Length: 408
Image (cartoon, rainbow, N blue to C red; front, side, top):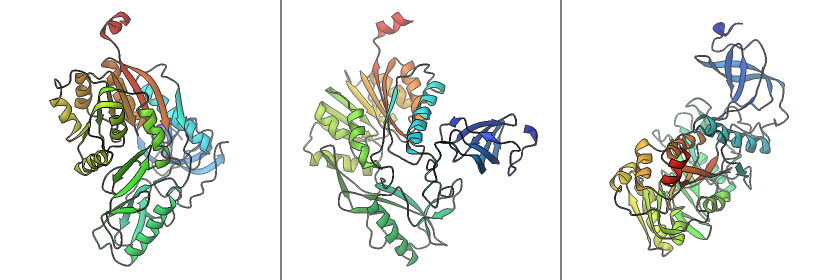
């Protein structure tokens, strides 16, 4: 079978061997003159694969048969694996998951950030590989009353009764919400639910049956954070303290800026290490909690601004004489060019970039390096076991103009 004759739905005539895991969690193989990207694969697998989609010389494929399993392949314990679109690394043993995530970060830094020799990348393993998630977003099919997650590659709802990565108390919430939905509490228009747990209680948005969008609180790293299901907070409390410690590592001085500050996860500890802190966040629900959390902690040296980050930076170009430290923790798409331009304009001495997407992180790091910064360190955190997602913290410092000129 030639590469020209391949069609969607066909099985490739020859077996393929998975070389490595790529960003996005797919396995890389080559066959029939094409690059083959195989979902739910393990490095070293020898497989029969079926073509799901073609794009130029790249074929996206799924496994039709495992001829020879990889040494790192394990039997996924979840009965929904392969159908539910949530966990795509359950086929890998845990060390292989960690290794793949480090390789994904390194690959992005090499290809996208164009770094020939990035610093060593260490990764902190999750204390719990299962039952770690303290927040979730569930989909509802109003006709069938299914409750769960979207099936892989579709908007069909996979009805999930037990989710292996949910914290036990959140699993109880999923069970009880299922009963509410089957009893007709959801109506015909509700399509999704967000839920989060705190130290003692639960918040669900929108409110449903006995569940309300109540405020919850978590005690982490000596701070107490309030938020609810309508405002973002990290999904894995077990690693948040370590994440904060790395993001703020030995940072101190007069002024720190916290971009995309959310409910103040980093703003509170920054306020204990700097004379003055400014947190910026566009979501007004999040900034409500950030101000409230600062007030509850009696931290009066931090101000929270509700504004788009790019818009706010554009207005601050000449407002600061000196910025000692800038932390940014953007959403998965990373930052816009105007944000990078704004950061370079205010010229912080040090930057800490917290990211949940290695590809957009690498893209933005390249721009910061081009703008005069040097990459000092990279640390990864496995906040999302059983998935290809990974949290990364990088530190950069401003290279003095004279030093840049000497190196040119």
